[in-house]
Amino acid sequence: MGAPDPTDISALLERYERPLVRYALGVVGDLESARDAVQETFIRYVRDTAAPRGPGAEKHVEAWLFTVCRHRAIDHQRKHSRIIPMPLPEDRADDAPTPDFVIAGRDTEASLLGLLDRLTANQRDVIRLKLQNDLSYREISQVTGLTETNVGFLLHTGLKKLREIIRSEPDFADLPLRQTAS
Amino acid sequence: MNPHEPTEAELHAEAQDLENLAAQLRAELQAEPAFPLREEQRAAIFAAAANKVTSGPQSWWRRGSLIGAAAGLAVGVLSTATVLQMQHLHDLRTMVGQPRTAEARGLSIHLLDEPTLSAAPEEVTAPAPGQPVVATQATPPAIRLELPSFPSAPVLPPAPTVSPVRSSLAGEPASVVSAPRVDPASIPFVGHAPKDLPRSAVKDRAAAKASPTPKR
Image (cartoon, rainbow over all chains, first blue to last red; front, side, top):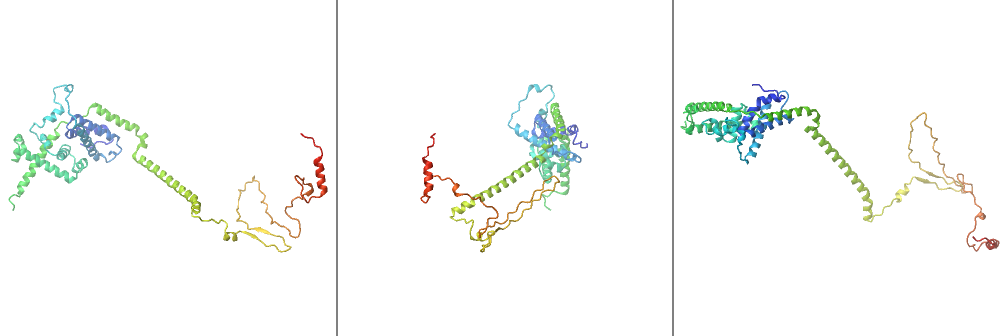
């Protein structure tokens, strides 16, 4: 998928809205906070004169959006670390599982996503940006503030740690990866 | 060969293992549900974009570079004005403080000392017997005032030059200004008569004094 026109806010929303909410949800762990972070990201993009625009800015827009979104999500995470969430009954309009329920329940599943929480924050961040959003090492370096070498190292050590967990724990016996490794 | 060192086949298998893990993790991560923004959040973003577009040309003065340049200019002007004012105050203090300093030190200031007097521009010619005293004054450097030559402008006559003052020691009348002569007898006498006044004059004055004059 090609990069949208940086001046077309509608095209930018169409392209990056959902990936940014998903990424922010992985950082902050709360859907509403993730949505707020993404909304603030786009409003800042609109108002900030230093945001990448013009010809040739398509390559930089994605890294800029993820950088600001990451910072906003971390800010929300710090705010919400002191708040105990209370589920509201009126929000459950149907029997469909809420996004929070999906996120909270993934630890119980024998999936790789549930194992990500056992990694460090930096390893989790790098794996999400690389494997989920297909950012290059340079873009991940811009988003996280780490060096490109450090990005590669964190990605490698994170994957090795996941593999060790899969090999050592019986809950993941049905994963095809374990069968391949053994 | 170190028995704990992995063989090439083991390294290849490990790399393949990690690649498979990465592929599986990528598939799961990209299949993770991605939620959109709420409608009001999208509306807020579009409203911010519309506001930015409409207010963009009018808010050019809010650019950071312009604000910084204006602030720098203001600081420069203020600092320059302050420096100039401080210099002026310093000069004034120096001018006022010097005489006081001299007085405090007990120094006497000779404004017209000998070298100054000897170097005075006035030249006095000693009069010779029978010759008029001529006092000439050194002419100061001429200041030329050139008026524009308008056709309607009146032409001022040249300023009269003061001729040297001549006085005669041989009894010649002054050629420049002569004071009117006054008859001493026409000066009214008031007060006591001096002792050397003629007796007739004293009598006339006594008679004039004794004459009846109506009292008011």
